[in-house]
Length: 438
Image (cartoon, rainbow, N blue to C red; front, side):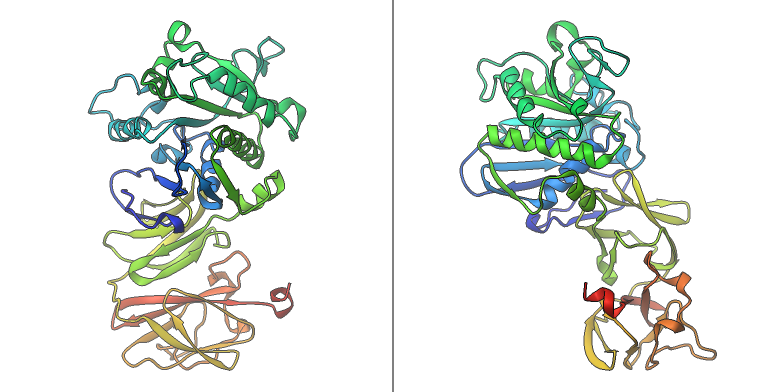
């Protein structure tokens, strides 16, 4: 599944099915001179703090000076399967790997990105076991733990910008440790002394970077922290401290708090299927939807969320947000016809023109105006002897609620056909007048 380059300001990732999912690169550049920070998330697919944090970073931060490059989903195939690495540990493939390795293309590409002349510093995001402490306390708090730590491979890099690794890590941690959710969540600096003491880490992404005179750190939140919003809070807080160190100026569209992050994480984003202009709000989507129109050909889709993937599994399609299953679609396959761009509707007695693919809100009723040569099928509504449901005034009470596509059972698909070809659909959402005023 290859990413197609689009306008990054919209954060619209476009995908089509192929053998593998491919990572996204979102460049948030100020247009002003300054340092460039590269954020890499998702090298391990079972460490969600390491990829949901850069997803929010990509969606909600604006860079005012300097540059921020974000790869939120490096090991995308492993992320959607919630596995450390379906082809082995990707973070142990940076010293040497065979071209036949299934991760070869991705690792080769990310190496080039790390070594890009513009990149000044790289952060590799993880969730690690336990809580790192310099002395043994118990099975969770000890020197062998990795969680709640900023990882360095060595003390410093004398000839590199931002090469004072230990000093930077210590300062970042001191600032991150202010206003912790719990005191035991404090961050500490873990120096793996990779060259002398850790052969496994000699194959890692960060060690590859520093051996090529590119400063790099790993940020490890703890797997023992079970609330995802807590881990994402700490990841973002730490990243901001690094941006401050690099004099990268930024703004964000939210208050950095655990409560706000929890709300942001509940928004799975928008999914669009361009050929027939189908738009789905993933945050409200039902866990299972029947009679969903799809083409037997290659499925191309867009999302405002770089962690969204649509995966075919037997005769169904799974919509994933990272390692979280959002919904399953049971498809009805059709040939597609793209000749219809808009339709006339009567919403609560008022005539409007609606684009195919749009979400239309109604309170009491809707009606589809006659369209010459096209047939209308309102999913969840039926009337004996009627095969074309055009010109019929439909109210909420007329629907079988189980056919709604949202969790509140208020949104229904209105599908359009030309002969036997599918031409797109509009979603009608019935809103309670009192709720809509809140």
